[in-house]
Amino acid sequence: MIKKTLRKILPVSIKNQIGMILEMAIKKRIIKRNYSGFPLFVHLEDRTGYEWYNNDWDLLPEIELLKKGKLCSGAKVFDCGAHQGILASILANITSEKGQVIAVEANPHNFDLAVKNRDINALSQLEIINKAVGEKEGEVSFINRSNGRIKLKNINEKGIKIPCTTVDQLSKEFGTPDVIFIDVEGYEVNVLKGAKRTLESRPDCFIEVHVGCGLENFGYTAQDVLDFLHKYKYQIFVKPQKEKEFKLLEKNSECPKEHFYLVALSV
Image 1: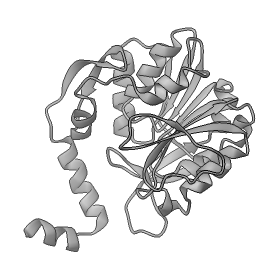
Image 2 (image 1 turned 135 degrees about the vertical axis):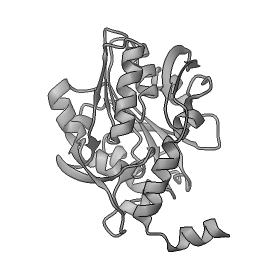
Image 3 (image 1 turned 180 degrees about the horizontal axis):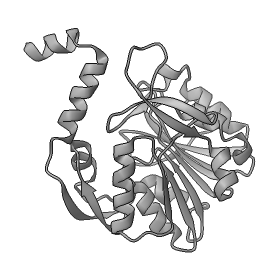
């Protein structure tokens, strides 16, 4: 009863601060687990890390599908919204030292952990950048929690100022990628708008599409994501969260109405 009352009366900014304190109230440790076939050491320093990374992972279906395209040894990969660098570390193992992974993470805490996880696994081909990724370069307000996101303009939340880059700017700095991963908590269309020049080279893409959990808050729909990619003549595969396999989405097919994963392969 008290918890419910506090949720109603406390300002959003205070609730976010309390959430971060609880998130960090955990014993730090280093574990070794197998992620998609690669043994990795991982720093666990918050509750989200324990929930997401303290177990072995089977081969991720998006990895399996992207390997049929351009994801291979020697590839260049951009990972937008890299969290604590676990996926980026998997990708760095796949690309090998012949390739390169550029991982971009806005949350300072997650960025620090991603650097620790890279260094403990000696992945010299993995570059990690503490920035947000969006439609244009500049600065954005970021809600600083473990699974944080860009601040919404119409909601009274306290964010921190974070530098923002674009996929096109990353391409200028590091070269055009073969593969792009996007997991940005509803900001995916904004990231795609900042990738127009890069997409002309038709890199393969993975996008987590946050239908019903962030995408609409920024004024977009899943159809907007699909329409954007159709301009570049991609073959699109989708997998709703509860399903195990990706399925080809025909051009005129109805897009999923819930949170789903998308792989776009150049054909």
